[in-house]
Amino acid sequence: MYKDNSLVPSEAVRLAALGLLAKGPRAYADLAREIRHFAQRIVGPSLELLGPSLELFKVEGLIEAQNPKAPNEQQIMLLTESGRTELKRLMTANLRGPMGEVNKLIIALKLNFFETLSPEERRIQAEVLEEACERELTRLLDLRSHHAESGGLLVAWLDHEITEIEGRRDWFRRLRNRSN
Image (tube, rainbow, N blue to C red; front, side):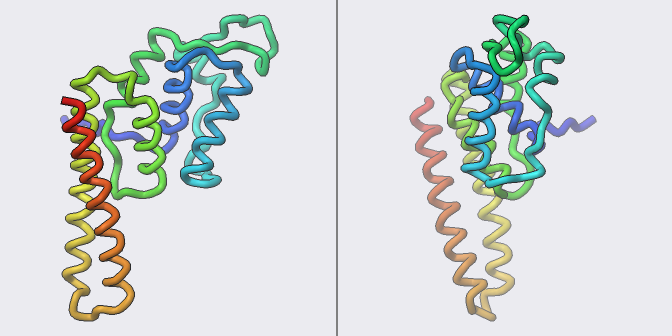
């Protein structure tokens, strides 16, 4: 049976929380604020990104309070071993569908927490991101060839998008080569 290993939008919040805690303990309120700030600066306000709360991550055993008796906003949150395992799963998961705003957020999060991966895992992830750009290029080049004769603003815009994605693909290729 085929199993889809790609991230859904709500997992971006999970990736953000676990990745931030992998960098070090954070106060509950600061963690929530950092997640919201990062996500909103990449994609803006989004209902798609209303993921599970930090409380759910505690119930799932992914994070824990260093001082559980303190009020939530004063608790210092730590990443558990289960949280580290989940972070690795999220960091090595594929991207879903075309390169939309949520995928851009997931890429930014993966790059922000890239150091949590081994050198081989970093190389593989750079390759996965490069391949995602290749798929996007294939899709846009096909659309462009279909509309090439009509010219106009659509073709000009597609040329702009294609150039941008080619640059992104080349950047990931260089990242992959550095990770070897």
